[in-house]
Image (tube, rainbow, N blue to C red):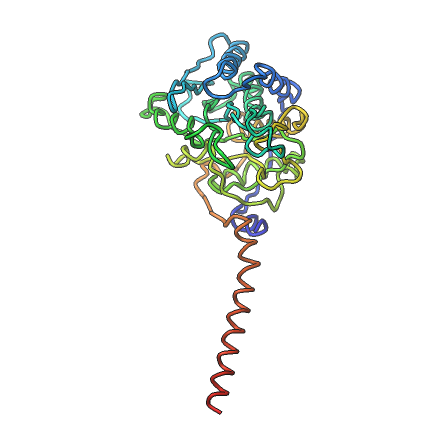
Amino acid sequence: MSILFSLIGFSKITIKNININLLFNENIAFKHLENQINLNKTSYRIPGTKGREECAKYFISEFKKIDLNFTFIIHNFSIQGIECQNLLFKLNEKKPNILILGAHYDTRAKATKDPIIEKRNLPVPGANDGASGCAVLLELARVLFSRRLNLSVQVWFTFFDAEDQGYDLDHGMNGWDWCEGSNKFVQDIASFYNNSEEYFEAMILLDMVGGTSLQFIAEQYSTSSLLNEIFEIGRQLGHVKEFPQFPISASIIDDHVPFSNLGIPTADLIINFWNNPDWPYHHTTNDDLNNVANRSLGITGKTIEQFICNNYYNSNYNNYKGNRPWKVDVYVMDSDLFLFLIIVLPVVGVSIVVLITIKYRRRKEQIN
């Protein structure tokens, strides 16, 4: 299946990254990740808790360190009577075209997949599943602010609450669905911009981008031409393991889907979290600082920084040609389903042939 994706889902593209000094600092990003984990080790960032509130305040304080006048919007909403909060920070507000960068910052209330049954009611630290994407956004904000005068795009940094409480082996929070925050955000998105003067070019979601043994999949709700371009940029930076030529393919309900449903090209950078022996910590108490890496944050951040510079950096020498405006989208069957069909269809075919042969011989014997 993964080969089929590379030949079809990842349409042919010939690009060359522009030559620019990438400023993303993986150590600063890791410090942001660590700070989120250490804010409140009792509740971490569970919706409706002190830890979640402290994390939102931390994001605001970090953006104010970049610029005291950094524009931000607090988007309040409630789920099942629990107060939640998305955060939106805007860079280059006067530019009409908008690139959305997003991550969720809530942590799962119950470690429903923990191998130790007694721990399944404990909260998930969420070092990779939540904090990693947010850490990359914070460092990208610092880097892109320093380049803002040369960027021909408005950038939104969006931090979603209430993403991670849906049902796997149980609910994180009873009655909650996945992606509650991003769905609420999109429902109210008209109030965040002027649709007569501004428009969205793309949305890139960073989810589980800091784990050890990082390797991204070909997520199928993503727009293939956009995801393809990001993968090729990463490979040209030398990250061929993390952005494989033949990636696993899967369709993941994640925070990019509401934006995709609006017709905005999207890309979800996410790993195989469901049957991955190299990172088996999803929704367990082991999603902690021991199982994330500076290098993974750096690979993700530099790839997105390069993507933005390729497409939006104003320079007389920037002749970059990518897939923008990312209209092409080719769906490819999920790898697991494809492998299942590869195994099952021949068996079914052989069984049909055997049954037909037996039936034919019996009829022949009856005639004779």
